[in-house]
Length: 294
Image 1 (cartoon, rainbow, N blue to C red):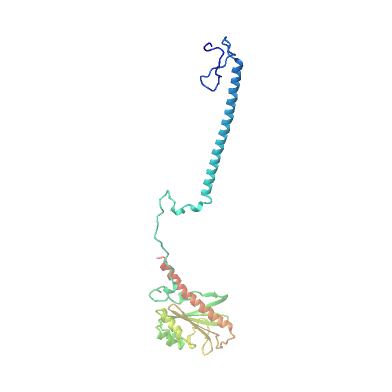
Image 2 (cartoon, rainbow, N blue to C red; image 1 turned 90 degrees about the vertical axis):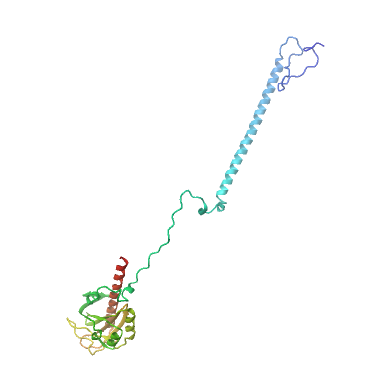
């Protein structure tokens, strides 16, 4: 058998195996390639590449899908951490802050307002000017819809001289230092209001407590005000505020007695008693305000 190109067994050419021999024509000696075999081999090679490309594309698609799935899962995990599990985060106060801590200051509170009554309960604090014109400055005043005209005024340091009945003893026994009076009129009714001054609120309260139905301030007449409550039945009131005790005596000029049916008399006495209280309290308010702004 001839060596190399004769008949005998010949290895088949495989395009995917290295060093394999290409097929030639059925043992011919002309050295011409077998073009049909080459074409068939080329077609087989092309099909294999196409299958590989298709398979690789499928694998790539699966890989991309897996990556997207992982990304979606990761995103969902982040949302869960910020939503359902938000309570697991530390409190705001424990989180680090990029700014410096705010300075702390000692707690302060405004002082309590001054009590006006404190300034009229003791002669040492009640230093505002005092007289008939400061206690009763209104020539005309209206109380609860009723108008009153101011009459004569009086101011004495002999308290007993401006009192009658048991009031003189009450005032003197508790250290009264001054008794200031004025009279107001309204439609045939006259009322004298008297303010007794003491050094302390305790003295004024004691005087009020000791006063009885016969403790009456003396009516102040003159200056167009006719005599009233001179032997006639009149209505009187007693009260105190701070270091002041204040009294009213109301009746009819001309000696007419007051009865329980004379409601205007009762109203007149109550109005002037309220007016005296307001004026005394106002003294305390003015002095407390001045002290607060010093």
